Amino acid sequence: MKLGSANIEKLELNGNQIGTLGCKALAAAIRENITLKTLNIADATLGPEGCKEIVEAIADNSIMEELNIEGNDIGEQGGDAILELVKDNSVIQRIKFERGNYVSEKTTKEIREILDTGSFVINDDETQS
Image (cartoon, rainbow, N blue to C red; front, side, top):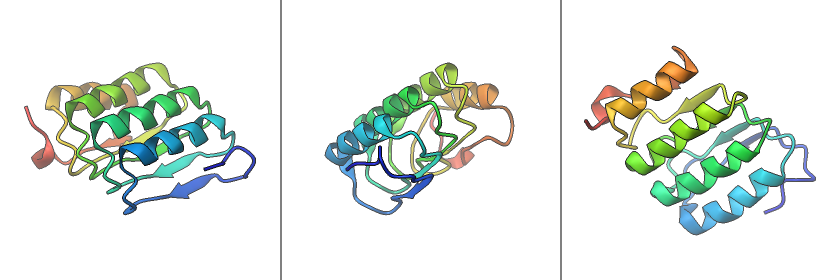
């Protein structure tokens, strides 16, 4: 996957079965890209490791503003990766993973505090404590 030379600002991959291996290729493309501002990878079977790959790539990207990663069963490991992302990356403005990710309420609260109200969405019945 080569995004570096394309002027893509929004990439919709939701519903595709990307999986962990596909996340490695997508992460490499994100690192090279200089125009991608919005990435929707909801319901893409990322899992915790795939989430970590993508989030680490976004941390290296200085332009990405919005990420939808809901429905990927990322667990606490993925939640921790997102928390590190929002701590270190001031460009990202909105992260959505309101269902199917099972991140603890503690981690969710920390992310909410960093991104401020309205920027981070999670459904309380999907959180684990």
